[in-house]
Amino acid sequence: MSIVPTSSLTFARFVGSAFRTVFDELAALRITVFRDFPYLYEGSVDYEKAYLETYARSERSFLFAVYDGDRMVGATTAIPLRDETPDVQHPFLRAGYDLDTIFYFGESILLPAYRGLGLGHRFFDEREAHARRFGQYTITCFCAVQRPDDHPLRPADYQPLDAFWTKRGYQRNPDLQSTFAWPDLNETVSSPKPMVYWMHKIG
Image (cartoon, rainbow, N blue to C red):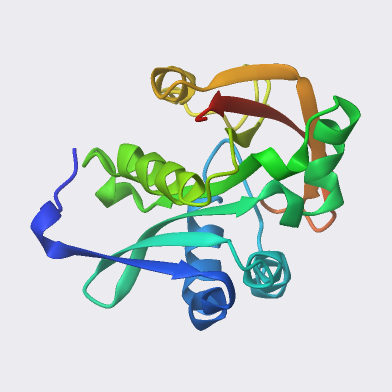
């Protein structure tokens, strides 16, 4: 149960190069949240800044951030698929999609104390509204890591977000997959992780 009242929170939006003004706090938040299952991410600030530079170079990229006081406690990002990296674009090109009609949703991250306040829905609302603003995007999508059900670090009470995503109108598309590599907790070498895409028509 969350102990944080929504009245204590403030929100900020950043577009394009404005990402660079919050690189440090956004990188720190990503590293903290993604340490948990299913990502188990052993992150580094240098890697994070290189990753976030893709968003800073896109004129239409979007960040919606949640603050408690001056501390960033949640964030969600989006970027035109045309501006993403080749690893993200490849499965869509192979399947014959027009990249210029798709807006890609990056992370949605919240510190545990701020979950259960409806911010997950707010994150999707904000990103979908941003994508619609341009009048050319008909599909929004994101990807999720696939971990085996018997993974040794899977918490006993872990609940995947599939039902929430489905309720938001997103459908899992197992034909669209990428492979990303990062070091799991306590690893020094990156290992490949399968990522499956979820899609939603907004046009």
